[in-house]
Structure formats: structure tokens, C-alpha cells
Length: 286
Image 1 (cartoon, rainbow, N blue to C red):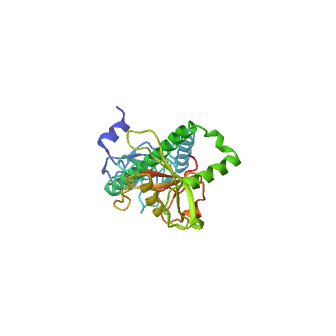
Image 2: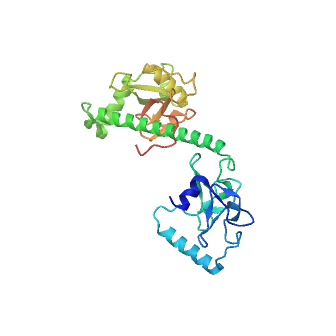
Image 3: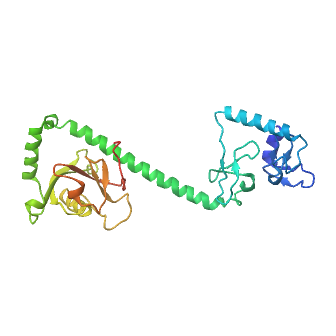
């Protein structure tokens, strides 16, 4: 085992004579090849025996090698918010903390020096949020794929593309749509509503409904869920895994509960009630 490996395991005493303190993450000077503590890591701080020009040449050579390396980290600020040091240079190396997964200067390399425990908790929280977001997107994409697969096999699905057939389909939709009888004709908006299959079934739940065009999306969701006989506990929980959201097919986005349905959509459009996807500003890539 070489000296560098030994130093990584048991530490070394700073070779700047007046110091000589034990350092568990010593820095090796690339010019004189001696080991120093964080306070004496630079050539000037340990009064390097190598002439200044040669020190600079060694540093330049090291930088050139680093630029050629495909795995180089690159220069960046120390991960400690209170530190202004630039790390990742030949003379100021970076130390990676495996706990919080950040890079630090030698002064803040120890966990107690950069308050690692707090950062670990924040990182874990961010990871969980990212995982939830990805899970929601995966769920939405899976539903979209299932919808495309099922609707493409429906009889007459290709015949509905013509303008005349669309008009016929819209008139039929208005005739068969369900909704509250107290809504005046001139205030109605007619929408196709779909939802995920019930557990153990593959068939999408769907129906045609009309709503007041000045109703907010949250109210439309309540009425549509009731019409499709879907369990809706949005008023009882804040857990997005259990809450229903409204996905606007033509717009490719989630609708906010406070939006007016008549301004966000138009008659003949399709909305989908999805559980566990959470809010999202735009999902047009689906």
C-alpha cells in the first residue's frame, strides 16, 4: 500500500515543521510532494521549498492533465453556504462528502464543519419529492398509453375524424349528456369525461356530461366523479396519492381547481379524472 493510501486510512502529520498536527485528510503539495494540513495546503502557507515558477509550472501541468481527464469535477464553489472558496483547482482540491453528496474545501471537509446532518435531511426530502414527482409522471404516462391503446381499438374510432362526423358526434353528445337540469342551455359546457378503470378491470370509465361554464374545476371534478361513481375524498385528505386531479386532454396539462371550466376548455373537449398524479403545469410531451 502506498503512502497516499496510508494517509487516507490513518491520516498524517502536517510536514510544515511549526505545525506537525495530525490531519486525517492531508493535502499533498504537487510541487514538493509533502503532506500538509488544510491550513498549510498552499505553497505559500507551508513555505514550499520549490521555487515559485516551478510551483506554477507544476500547477499548470496538473491543470492540463485535469482538462484532459473525462472524469474531472471542474472548478466550483465550496458546498458550505458560508464559504467563498473555489474548489476543484490544482491547489485547492475538493473533498466529496458521501453523506450529503456535496463537495467541500479542506476547511469544511468534516461533517461537523458543514453541518452535514441538516443537509442530509434536506437531501433526503428533495429525493423523496423527486421520486414522488417521477412516480406521478410515470402513472400519468401509463394511463395515457392505456387510453390510446383502448380507444384505438374502439369500433368507428377512425371514422370520427371528418368534420361532418364531428358535428354529428357533438350533437349526439349534447343529446345524451348528463348533468343538472337547473343549468340553463346557454350556460352549459359539454365535456367528455374519462377516468381510470376500477381495480380489477381494464375498461376505462367514461361518460358525457354538461356543467355550468362558469363553474370552477374543483366543482366540475366533484360532479363528474359522482356521475362516474368514483370515490372522491379530496375534501378529506391532503395526500396527493389519494386525491383526484383533472387532466385536460387537448390542453395537455392539469387544470387548477380554481380555474373556470368554460375559460380553460370548450364544448367537445375531454377531461380525465386521475388519482395520485398531483398538480403539474404542463405535460404536453405525453
